[in-house]
Length: 314
Image 1 (cartoon, rainbow, N blue to C red):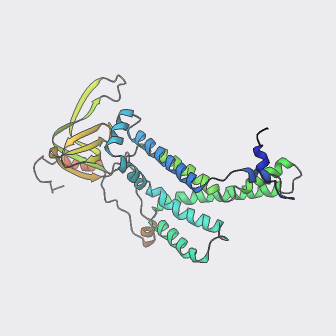
Image 2 (tube, one colour; image 1 turned 90 degrees about the horizontal axis):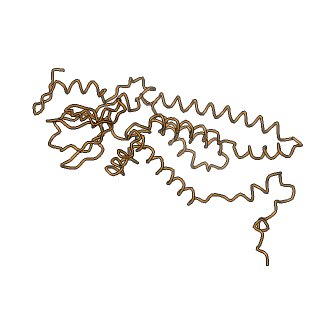
């Protein structure tokens, strides 16, 4: 007895159904559990890629960072990309609310408007304009798809009719693909940006910040100790502090007792530049970052003597 044909179990397309309807019925749908599993795997992959980029593509440093702070990677990575996530939530919420307005219950509209308004007002003005540019590009794509579908709708060619029905599934999704491409570009562009704030350190003594000259290409031993440097505190206990050097990406373990001063700063070479939120722009307020450039903070620490109070005559 021959095994049953899988195609035989597929119900036939109804009479008068458009061309390609049988293919659409035979395509299995992805369940919510599968979507959660795929999304979790993608997030884990993104976090691993992020650690790899922050380590400047060194597997040794990548392993050290992952062992030191596995939880901070996830929370910190989401936080540093808030500049891009907030406009994406605001504009994406409005886009899909308009796209699927016929399916949205009236009671949900106030919640949608609150989410879109709050995230838009909290979005940095510069990054919100970039998001609007993505939306305008998506509108142009939608108009192009509509014109092409209108041209193929009454065609006698079965291939064009199939393409017409395939394009029907793309309606309203152009903003998803363009937005995902834009976020992926920003992610890769800032791949080596650590997920914690930079700090300027002044030590009582000195600590090794690199064991080689990164620019000679010979990979020879060259130990360089420093007492003042910019780094990223990766992990911290009562007795020890793990710091990633901002320039060399060397992982250092420093006793807490050896740290004289540590001041939070903004590393202009690595970290994303801030901008005033839309709410502040509407109120006419100017934006001033609460964290000074790390180079200025290092120059300030050069005036301090370890063990003495911070200088006030700046």
